[in-house]
Length: 78
Image 1 (tube, rainbow, N blue to C red):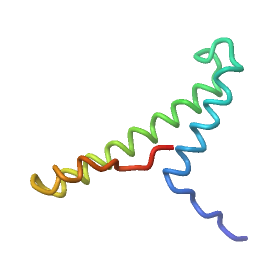
Image 2: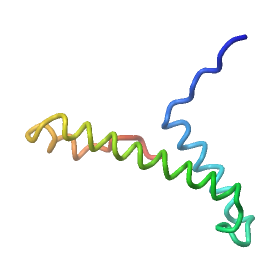
Image 3: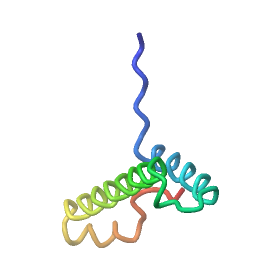
């Protein structure tokens, strides 16, 4: 049995954003829906991970190089 290829974090994030944006208007109380909350929490977790990684990379480059990299976005906006 072949293993599934793991999706990149950027692909996961765009997929989750799409799901959340589709489901939110349909719900009367999004915070009360357990499945929606889990989905939203997963999206937020991925976003935190991405931001943390970008910050780590920026700090690893050093002070002089880190300033130039700060102008460029770490991940493409979806």
